Image 1 (cartoon, rainbow, N blue to C red):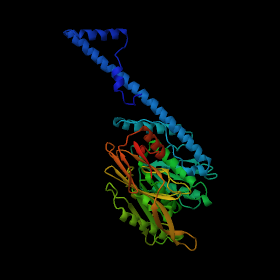
Image 2: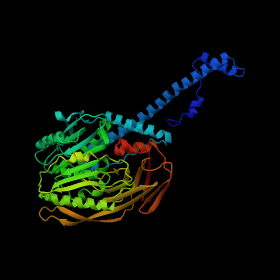
Image 3: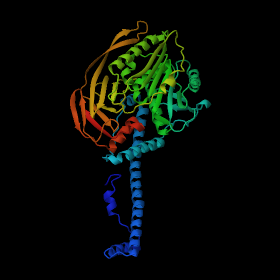
Image 4: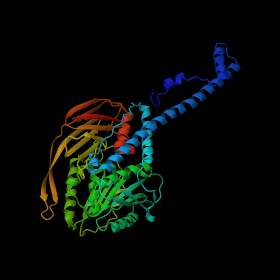
Amino acid sequence: MPSQYDITGHAATNQLIINGEEADKASEARHIMDKKPTKSMIHFNKIALTLGIAFSFFVLPSSLQAHTQSLQEKVKNYFLQTLKSKQNTDWKSKEAFQRNKNYSTDIRRQLKKNEIDANEKMVWTAWCEANRELKEEKLAQLGSLQKGDHDTWNLPQGLEPNATMPYYYGSKGKAEGELPLFLYLHGSGPKSQEWQTGLLLGNRFNDAPSIYFIPQIPNEGNYYRWWQVAKQFAWEKLIRQSLVSGAVNANRIYVFGISEGGYGSQRLASFYADYWAAAGPMAGGEPLKNAPVENCANIGFSFLTGADDTGFYRNILTRYTQEAFEAAHKAHPLSADKRPLFRHRITLIPGMQHRIDYDPTTPWMKNYVRNPYPKTVLWEDYEMDGRHRSGFYNLQVIKSPSANRTYYEMNISNNVIKLNIKNVEYTTIEKDKHWGIEMKFSRSYTIAKGGQLRIYLNNHLIDMRKPVTVIINDKQLYKGKVKATLQDMINSCTEYFDPYRVFHASIELNY
């Protein structure tokens, strides 16, 4: 069967036969062409030629359209089946959710250069249709944030008992097209009060036009942490549904919060860095084992804490974060394509304790736009509440070399992909004597072996017309051209659910 747009051979076999009379006319036209043309013959031939061209333009696109629709339906059905399978897994148990299964389609088709854009659009359209058909609690209709409209999601019972998450979802300001999305995480006071305060702050912050998602923590006590698996389910659902909605700019999604929301947003900044344009924890301070700064390369990172905010050593831990960012910036000032890699503002505000001025954060973050195709990626693959990410930017882990932590450093330049992959071990070098908080760490690295990695690619990352070289841990493991395939588009869309990461090709390697 010819590919979706391969109609050359098909077009040659199409004949101008409307009915018997038209066939006779066509035969007559061929016969009289052997004779000296007269004015009437010339006129007839012009009519026949016009009819032929018009008919071919009428027939072929409709046939092509039907083929495209059939393929789109097939891809949509695969997506819907996959979403249902993942839904069943997510709701089954915490252990099942933590495994974070990879999915791979058996829909295979190599694509020509002129077919790539249309198929990328088709795949994303099919993904959106599948998500709309999926039976689940949908994101609320977008109204005015000022009105305080809200809805509720029920989170999987297997991830957290009786986890009901109310949320405000609304826009402020007027603008055409897709808007920035801010995810705001509240502090650890009484959850109803903190949630209401979040709405007041969201309406007050100077970042319009924008969209806000302001959740209420489902449960208090031991479940009052924004990074636990039930909440991971919610954030991934939020990103997936908001991108499908068409209302949100995929390259302008931001996460921030205050106090407990500061801890949460710092962790989420590192864990989901490939989705954020910027992150803005306030009045927090996580031990860096929980939020490796390297992952925040390529995004904006603002962190404001009172210099005298001594509760749970927030000021000290903020300073350690500041020092770590400065060290990372010194080690990696520019990416492989000469962009600033670390863009951060970390400030200990003199004379301030836990209550600080929260207003400067969102206007600062809003200046940053995500680069979905960084040519330098730094990723410490770590667990958060027992769960690892299966992918990050254009990397997908098929088999991890370790059950613990793995560090990936990727640089792409002149169609050469260099990857250093290492196992990471932490050693605690400072520990709080009162609470037992692990404050500071050293890290040691060893060469990782026994892993399997898929590297997704497109024309933003490489020149697909030329051979690609892949070097992992100083060993050349691949050299050759890569081909665009429908399978890679479908698999990457399933993995990242991101309109900018429907990748055209991939290289899968064992190391």
